[in-house]
Image (cartoon, rainbow, N blue to C red; front, side, top):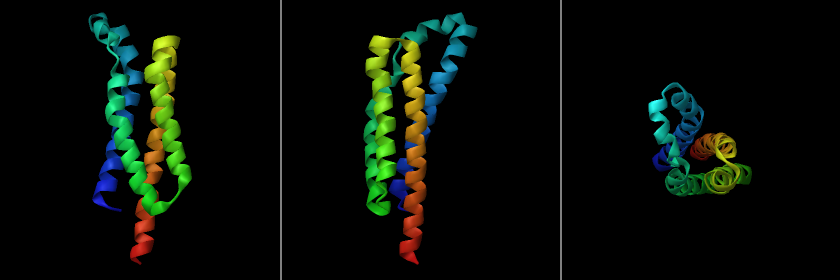
Length: 130
């Protein structure tokens, strides 16, 4: 696997994990520390899409060039769709709970796609170099 593909997939998985941690931890932090409640008004999900979506598209595209597994790419796009719906439609129209549910599901699905993208790319490169 090329260093750039490994780096992109690793970064994408890391960003998905940050998104997941943000969604799961923030309610407890806000509930436990009322002073921090003012920070819950910000909408980090929308800003993260600007980084997550292009990075994921490039990483999944580079991986697909090697493994040709369309299921991985489709799974990645489903994850990105859930993240986008959570950060836009769900956040604006359905409330914080819907936003969090879509974002958590999207982050998990996208991280899974990047994991398999990385594994499949590495395995294909090993076979090709043999």
